[in-house]
Length: 248
Image 1 (cartoon, rainbow, N blue to C red):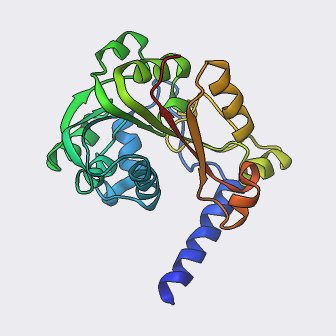
Image 2: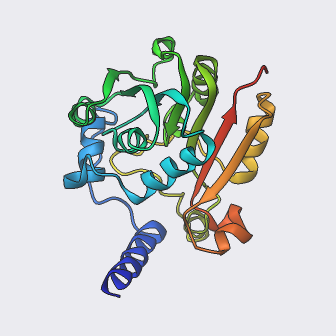
């Protein structure tokens, strides 16, 4: 009972912040985003622990993968490796490789026994360093780069079975309310240039088809329960995509 009350209070608090507030910090114009700081501020003492959002996304991966098969997974933007570590306990993995630009996050991923690679997907010339795997994950990554199409294509090219990725739903209710009150959607924690690309559910469907992807599924998750299934473009906070490999 107490936990449910705490969850509701947390939901109200974060909802109020999402609607009306800006992050309480001074913007340093001398530099862009520091992803070590990003992970420290975002997860703090919880760095290395699987969050509820990460678990939901990892469980969606499990729904689409045969748990009895031997598979390899590459996780681009793995952060502290929490999601990939969780998947290792559920799947028969021949290899699990995590890629990230934050050394701090990768050190925590290595503590969990993951193979890691320092990779900055914001630089197009580094995309060729992505290694082949049965499945490639990109959770909350493609919105951080201007060349999202090239990043997705690079991941799709290097995967044997399929690509999983997730993005925020910019059509979510709180973002619409911010616009109503004269503020742009708040989708950054440390520095305003964290998110460079934005999609609603309608945008996402068009965007995938425009690139020639056909064999995909979209799952809308989080947000306001029940309503996120009835009207996902408005009431679902996140969008999860699985593109099964086929010839474009």
